[in-house]
Length: 389
Image 1 (cartoon, rainbow, N blue to C red):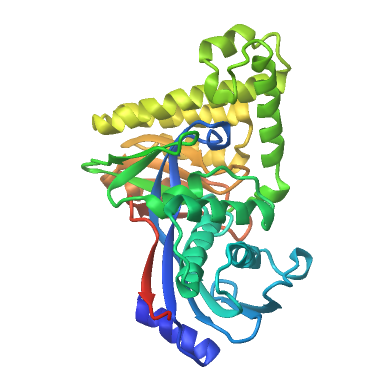
Image 2 (image 1 turned 45 degrees about the vertical axis):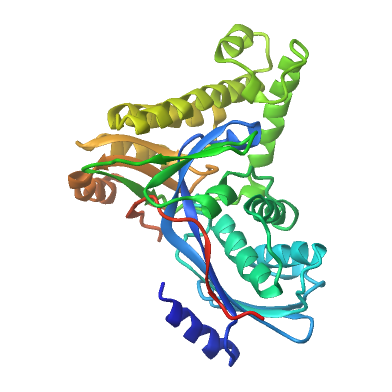
């Protein structure tokens, strides 16, 4: 995205000049799925696909927001947004604005334009990209300075309270804090993180969009969280030190799996083993052992498919097609599941063969051909232009 182009679009839409431009990337989670809300470990990267937001203050108390992706403009009183009255994309803008006002930000009304190439519902966290970009732009315009963890918490709360998705903190964290050329190893309990250099050599990460869109707020995402809580309660009755599945060993899960309710047992086995895989994957990346990294990706997908049951027929088919291509080291579903994307680690020279295999063998949903793009670990969110006073 060209900043001057975004400013021109803002001027053409609202007949005025924007005051602030901010951007935030989407993310691809390489491994560590559904561990974040279990106090576990995750290993995502920020994507080259980004969401851009341009804003200017208004003297009244109205919000005018326009999405170029949906070609949709909506207006509401800054304290009068209602979920039933507006499309879902407005929830992220309204939520961030409301939460900033709760922090006494000087935010009376504004015009806002959104331009994004992060596919919505594709498992690349278009929501966190929009929340972070909007939070940076609006806080800058309002003259309020927030620390990174405050911005992350604000964006995450907007997702919980306004979009209705009880997400963990991975998406907002990597979108804000990532460094180019590095994966982002995050401890979701302590919030400590490490930037792990990605020395891929002749390999590349490829994201394949299945064309199937998920809606986490109305899916079984919340049910999985409840099943994990049931597993935690089981182990806490035996060890009062257990606060989350992070505190349970794989040996303990194996020892008790026959005595537990079947679904909480399988959810626990996925989360606990996925934490082990994530730390092993970070170590493999540090050692540039990409073969081991690929094996762990495949194991992760099997666990998500069989124990956590958040994959789909389309995602499973894509993983099967892709891993059969010579030069592919590993592939797995990425994101919340029930649709979205697959991420693969492959030789650069095999990308064309992956495209051919997917085009020939993948049963795309009607009118939804799978899309493929390379991605490299990119930089976190930033304010690009500020003329706020």
